[in-house]
Every structure is written in C-alpha cells, then in structure tokens.
Length: 98
Image (cartoon, rainbow, N blue to C red; front, side, top):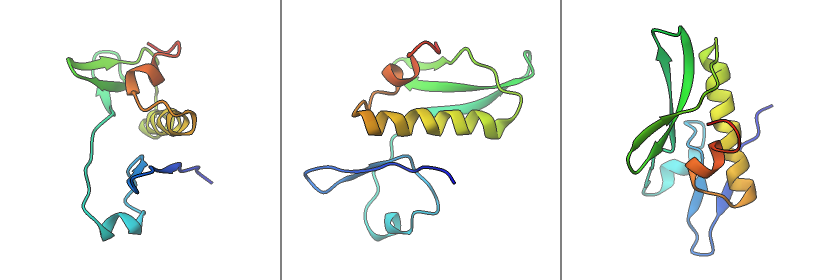
C-alpha cells in the first residue's frame, strides 16, 4: 500500500503530491506547481528524476531502469518532505542524491 501524505494548512489549503484518485481535489479550485519530473535519457538508457528550480531543472544522479521505480522514488521523497515540513524540492532531493 502506498503512503500518501496530505497536509492541511492553518488557512485550510491542502498540500499534497497530486494523485488522480483524490476525489476531494475535484471539489475546489486547484493551484498546481510542478516540483519534479521523470524523463528517459536516450543516451544513458535510463529513467531519471529532474527537480524543477527557478532556473530550470536539475537531474538527480540516480538512474532507474524502470519508470515506475523512478516515479516511486520521486513520490516518496516529496511525501517525506511534507512529513518533515520541507516543501522545497531542491532541498528534498539534495539529501545526497544530487
């Protein structure tokens, strides 16, 4: 079973990693912000997680042979950030992975 972390701010806003299965997200206005992206590297023949920064994207130096493993890593790191109160994707992924 996958863990999904949902934070509700004092203002009543919901902060979470987006998931199409969250029916409650259809009840209000969404403000989505991309924190990361998973892409195939043709030259290296591997999947990589890219974090979005204000200057573009940074690739995480951890290759994955399966896309679902890269996405699982991406979601786990973002959920850990919600649990720890760290909402900056660059700080989350730079815990030794960059």
